Length: 307
Length: 204
Picture 1 (cartoon, chains in turn cyan, blue):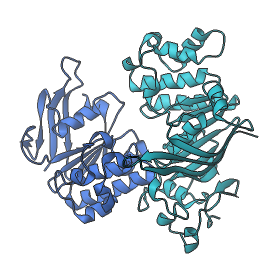
Picture 2 (cartoon, rainbow over the protein chains, first blue to last red):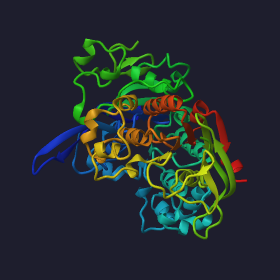
Picture 3 (cartoon, each protein chain N blue to C red):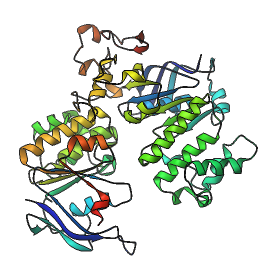
């Protein structure tokens, strides 16, 4: 049974345009994704496709002008704002994208200790620092004294000591050198093997392939495909959605061939399939309505033509 | 029009030397990759080439003549930064940003996928990928002989990355423009470059 389920999630923001006039712009539309215990689900896709917002929606830390609809379930029960505030940081942990998430006025050692649930917080913090090659002096430092890579390792350490059952890692690797990246990914894998559910949000498909079990592809605020990791190989013949195929082919290690156009803006979403304006396979049917997510070959796809 | 550095050395203030005696050449039409761990001075080296920093020792020459750092007019070596949102005046609309240095023609805008409608927007209304297209377009003036791409597409998804590079490579070929590519992404470097320099070697 999936430990975390997201069904038909939509997120929109209220904005003031002029005076008291409000507009609503929808940034996530009908998004579905599930994560099971013991697996790593990688979430990849264009920047601005709503990957980070999904993470924030799960933890209930969206800005106050956000309106969400749809259901998020944790352990089979709906994750209400009340449950979110109890569970976040304990059973649900976020490795945030920006190193600005550290408290600037608190020594990093103490920050990491606050998330330890076991008896001996100091020992746990020292152990995890050692694992991430942060030497003993670092625990007494303030965030501004750390390099970008050290700050990011501190964020990783915080999530790792929390003993959470769901870890959401939002772009945990940029700015780290390749040795530390491999190590960080291995730690995520280890957590998954020990029964955690891990959601790895990244635009680095290469590293997602190394550790993930399944990959969810996002486009313009929705999931277009969920595929087992093995299907990302060759020329992408086994992939289901035309966007995933295009994304795969555009990688420098593959064909490096781009498709035209850019992701639609939230305010100007097409009425039918969100990818139709850039899709080679598009037919008039695609413009009629948004395709629903359907099961296909051990994965899921949101495209009426996919086979 | 060879771009060349001779024995350049650089350090910030009294800090240890970042590099010494760097000799480096790029020929027109050549694409050179620059790789190495962070903190080894790749970006600083790029800033020297593009005239943003003056080396403590040595010289940067184009076709044998020094590029004066404070000369008037268009600098023949143009640098595109990693974070477009930090390289664009937030108070200017994109049309003004685009046309600051020169007036790119429609063909270039189409090649880079810049849409007419974006020109009337402010930078905070566009995504990083969209902004970076403008930064590339404004750096590709007719007098640009060398383009330096310092992690130019690191923040972008694969499709946008491939779009921008295809357009840049085509122009580089037409104009015999040299390109210096700084990136951590081995696959990208392999895909693009004729020659790769590791920063350890630069540092000797």
